[in-house]
Image (cartoon, rainbow, N blue to C red):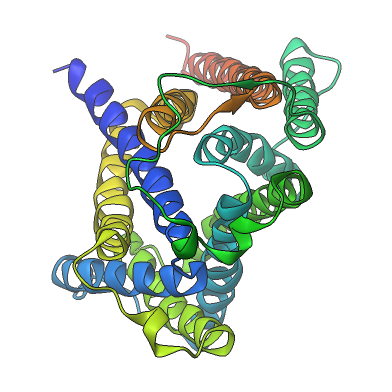
Length: 346
C-alpha cells in the first residue's frame, strides 16, 4: 500500500518528461508552437470538461462575473502566455534544460507567497537561513544555465529518433544556438515565473470557487480560445494547422490528454496521500528521466553548464523544501502544546 504513492509520482514525472520530449520533437519537426498550444488546450478541454460536469456540476457554486474575470486572467498569464513562452524557449534550447528549470518553480512560488504574505520568512532562524540559501542556490543555477555552457557531453548517440530533415526544421531552430540560447533560457524562466505566480493566485480564486475539477476545465476552455486567437494572428497558413496521423497529432494528444488530464488526477491523489512537499521533493526525477531520454531519443548533448545549473537548482529546491517542512513540524508541535495547555485541570 505504501509503495503506491511512489509509483504514482514516478508515473507522473515520466509523463512530464514525455511531454517535454514530444513537444521538443514536434517543434524540431517544424510545428508552429502557438498552434501546438491551441490544439493541446482544446484537446485537454474536450477530455476534462465532460468529467468535471459529471462529478461537480450539481455541487459547483454559481460562477460570478468577478470570478470568471479572475479565471480569464489566470488562464491568460498562467496557461496561454506561459505555454507560448515555454514553446519558443524549447525551440531555442533543449528538453533537458526545460526539465532542469522546473525545479525553480517551487522556489519562485515561495517568493511570490512571501510577496503576498502567505508565507513568513524568519532570517535569524535555521529554517529561514535554509530558505534564503535555497533562493540563492536557485538564482545561481539560473545564472549558470544562462551564461555558461561549457563543453558538450554527448551520450549514447547523436541521432534524432524522428529523423528531422533540414527542410522540416522549425525556422526559429535554424538560427545559431549561441545567439538563441540565452534568449531561450530567459523565456523559459519567464514561463516558469508566470506559472509560479498563477499557483499562488489560484489559492485565492479557489476560495470563492472550490470546485477544483471544474475550475481546471474552465481554465483549459478559456485558454483554448485565447491561444486560438494568438495562433491565428501569427500563423494564417492553413497547411500549418493540419495535423494528420503523425508526430504532431501524437504530441498534442499526449500533452492534452495524458500530460493535463492524467497527471492532474495523479497529482491530486499523491498530495492527498503524502502531502505537497513529498510531490515537490520528487521533482528532480523529471530532470533525470528527461536528460537520459533526450540523449537516447533526440540525440541531444548536455552541456557542462546545464549539468551544474541543474544541480544548483535541485539544491535550491531541497533547501527551501527542507526549511518549509521543518517549519510545518515546529508549528504542529506548538499547536499540540497549546492544545494540551488549554485542557481543563482535574
